[in-house]
Image (cartoon, rainbow, N blue to C red; front, side, top):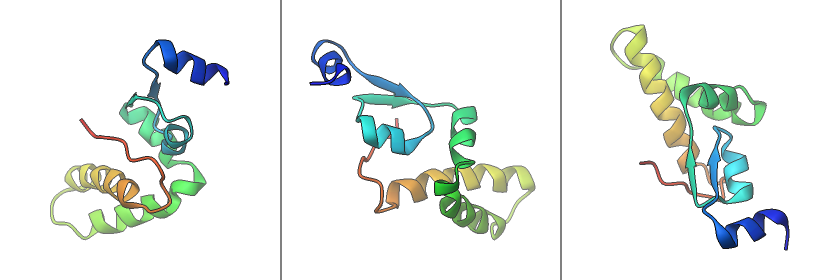
Amino acid sequence: MNLLESLKRYTTVVADTGDFEAIARYRPQDATTNPSLLLQAAQQSHYQHLVNKALDFALGLPGDQVARTQRSWTSYLYLWLRDPQNRSRPRLH
């Protein structure tokens, strides 16, 4: 049993990250994030295909640049949750 597994026996383990692969790897009981962490994660090369899809979708929407940017972030999260490569399915609160 490693240290993380030992901690899980006595406390609630949470992750504060935008790195979805880390969440999948460590399988915390809950996770939180903020926009700066999501931006940091989106800049990682293994998420580039999801960022590209989200941007392509948002660019085709009506509205100003701010509205399309907001929709691209929503699309990025949606695409990640739908990506079959992701083993862990976090709940969005």
